[in-house]
Image (cartoon, rainbow, N blue to C red; front, side, top):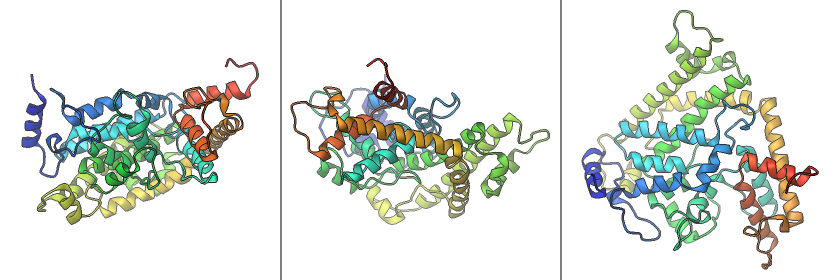
Length: 398
């Protein structure tokens, strides 16, 4: 049977010099005894999987509201796809797959119900109250450092610094770095922001953007919000179609969609691996921070040509899918539901559960807004809809 020390020795022999080894981890906020048979990053992954926030991802929207169709991605299936893509990329770059998986599984824990529509609704409510606003990356950090309650001696999951930096500094086209204040230890969060982002966390960022771009095409085609003809303006799309051309395969064939999405992912992953390898090969460095300083922020990246082609395809999706009238109708309804829930709690916060709203405490307006926001953000789509029915429709079971 392998011990933790055995696994760490294997990492030392097999991982690239620019990879993060468990034995060299920057540690945890609160000291813990090391596990006998699991590395620190393996423990992080397991803690995330067993968290309440991770289980709730099953009923949270990615793009299309989960009740619209069983085919569409949920926040959970998206997270699993990100983890799978990121591990495959990391293996090719000889990076630490356990660290990659831990960051990937944790990166979306802070999402509100109804996807980005729900996030926008909560963000606007908080800003109207003079607060910093709502950012799901920031809330993911709050979930794993404060809101999950599993251990008697500290709040949160006490994940390693490498995972926390990856969560806090996660950034894609959708997800900008959280620069606002966080709940909990603000000095600790500030120290993490000063840390270099591991290559493993950078891989997760790119895998996230790969997953949502290509799988939103899949869901968009399935929904009928976009057609293959709409995507022909994209150079990347046309190249993918050329790769899969075979006699008898036409755009209306169900196999066409799966093959072209597969080709899109393959082209982008190959470009990412080649560009990243060229960036790190031949560079002398003493530490991760030294490598980041020498190579710049985007060590794990696509080529300039691929960045341009991906943006062209993304622009088509924004126009044709994310702003399709059916999607706009769904997102408008989602914002209305969350705003109505916010208003009814604000009018009478005693409708909130006892463990959420302390009846013996006097809350300022800003504190009350924060309490309500956290309560709503923790809901799944299903829970938010059920709560809305209970509060606004007559004769619903309380």
